[in-house]
Length: 137
Image (cartoon, rainbow, N blue to C red; front, side):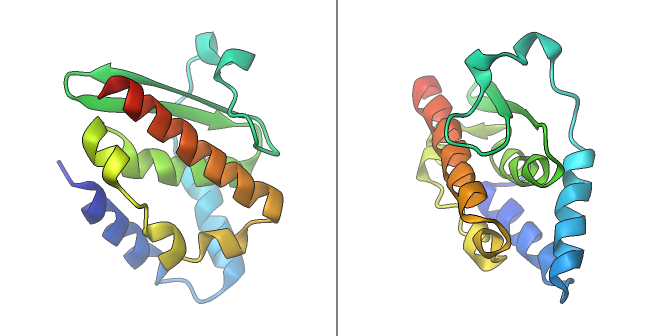
């Protein structure tokens, strides 16, 4: 299994292939479209991430020593953004999730691709994912 840092490096290398901002947006949308289906049983207000402009549903389960995340959004860009977070933190130990700085976000310029509202939503998603890790540690 890859570490968080290895996954982050992989993501940075993928985004280095794109010179055009529109290509980055298209790639983010494509990543969201490839996400696993979100369980309908968890598509409720209880699992909405507060602080997101779009609707983002997020929950996690502890499986052994690792945290498994499930997420979805009602907008394509936001779904792609949350897919990057899930890809990076999914199936990782809670301690590694809590210690991670998610440096790939700045390295790929993700916040600069997002409106201020969506950037705030990104922070809210990260906070919620780390909250789950804290609960499961």
